[in-house]
Length: 186
Image 1: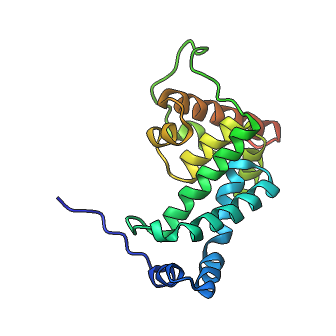
Image 2: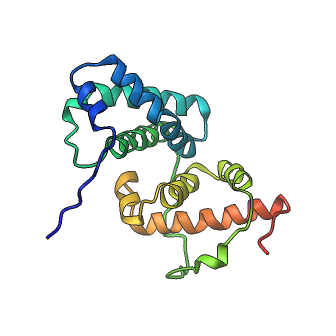
């Protein structure tokens, strides 16, 4: 059986960090800060919280860097820290996921082209920020971060069914928001 092999182009910097190099920490920060900030912002929707999560995540990563086993890339490891911290911030805000009990019927799968929206990325991003937390988080993790519903269920401690439901509702709500703004898919 073949094992997945991750090639981490920043492994030398990571090794230098393990030896306590401040310069290497700063280089890694410069390489990953913007992307990790964007991950946190998509989940939290508040710039101040995203900035806090970013700082805490790097602090955490550099403090625990000796635990980094290189089973993935440093970037993926850091991203997991950012996502977990972002979700903890949301939990403090007490956002709720809508359960699946209220749903009378749920289609198995909805074709992707049904929701294909031909819009500028900015307009869609802005509309995503208007979604309720639960919807936005699942939509972001699924569409933007590439997690599947099983992984999302594990990360958020919800059922896969709830993840799927949140995702479907998020897409529907997003479509409504975009239509209200006069943007329709052609």
